[in-house]
Length: 393
Length: 89
Image (cartoon, rainbow over all chains, first blue to last red; front, top):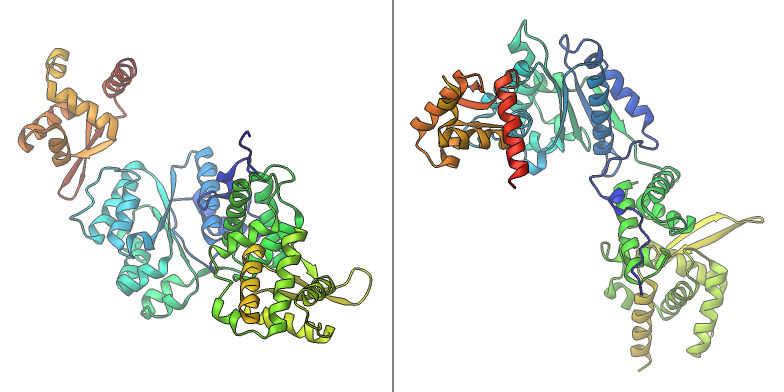
């Protein structure tokens, strides 16, 4: 059988891929452009320091790198020599010297890696910028780790360096990227005051925004029709529950695609997503399942069977209730009432085994929508069947 | 210096190929890679610099050498090495 894949270009789901356009970050991109507009107009007259904050997966790295690429091409068009350098401080364990060495390597790729202090390397970097008549934005990602390791001195050094270069062109600007401003609070007042001027905070993505982001990536990376709206909705739900983490959602898409390929399927179904998530989030904790009551276990088995057989991403409570009635018959047990079943759904949702959400019904009123975001239905069915059989014995 | 004097030295040709490939290198690094002592290496680098083929950039106590992009000689050397490497892989 010829190899088929749901992907048309999986590299577009890679963590290092920076899309041309970042949905829902236009405002922040424009703000960055405003802060650094002097690079296009009068680069030697000023430098800038901007802090970008936001939770994991809110697009800090993607935003700054996209901005850096756009500004570089715009500056080159205008004949200004400009370099954007993005360094993750954590990769260098927060030490300033290797971070500056990395920036210097843009001009001197074989510069010796050892034997020079941060002060010396900073001077060398400025000298290289002067010699090349170039301007630079140095983006320090996970800046918290540098603050933790090096403290106020390093920050002060970086932010006040122009004062030591009176009369010379301003060459070096900074973007400091961190999750929140907590790390900066520990700095001494002088270092803090030079930092906290321009702050861009990236709010966590809402579910609708996550859907837009995932739709964009799906269009770029998957074959047409390989990922349904329901699957995107399910992944967006998961990403939203992980503090609106778009990166998590994109990684889940890639992983789910891999599970689909391994089954030689031409579509990514909800079970692929559940398998992908269970590999990362352990949704199935045996000790918790063992402590459930008999009807809760029967209810969970009903959900597992429903999703295993239906290939849907979501189920209504009444659909699962029907499946539960069949299971009760199989086990020769009288089924419990609708209200009790509703309370099982709420309890299991609070444990994180399933997700119960009250939504507006299509016709009128409201209904409970159930999903199994983190546990593969096949695995859950196996587990519940085994537990119920051991109880019977 | 005459053309044949500059290019008749095997170490100098090795140094030029190395710098063309790696962009810029300091004296010790060049010496280590061409397996020569520091003084001889520094001497060859100086010759190439005086001829306008290489350019020296000082960072404190370290001296980095690169092709002098502003001169026709350096451009000719770069073209020579590029063509040579392509046709003799």
